[in-house]
Amino acid sequence: MTTVCRAGALALLALAFALAVAGCGETIIDSAKAEDTIEQNLERATGQKVASVECPSSVEVVKDATFECTVSFAGGKRETATLKILNEDADFSLTNLRPLE
Image 1 (cartoon, helix red, strand yellow):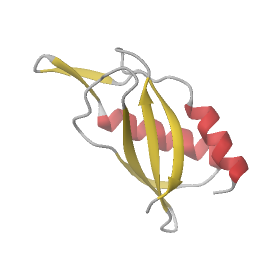
Image 2 (image 1 turned 30 degrees about the vertical axis):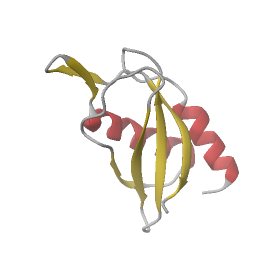
Image 3 (image 1 turned 135 degrees about the horizontal axis):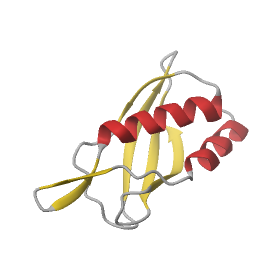
Image 4 (image 1 turned 45 degrees about the horizontal axis):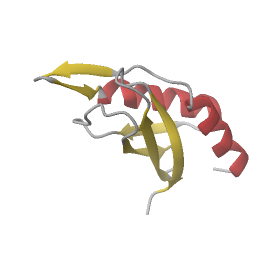
């Protein structure tokens, strides 16, 4: 992904998305919704087909905490998306997208 596309993807995903579910006394990120949101917005921002997105299933909603998801693009390229939780409502933004190491 070029620097211009990467910057566009980050800007597009800087919008907040409320993706939380409550369970067992704590609020966690709804990983399925997060994956769908990341996939749709990266495809729109980059013009590249996303084959899959994998996020952890038990990320507790803690303001300013970060978590990572693995993004697989069509053609086999894989990248790590770093997301920051913005508030207690589980709004998050994409802060970094880098090649999977």
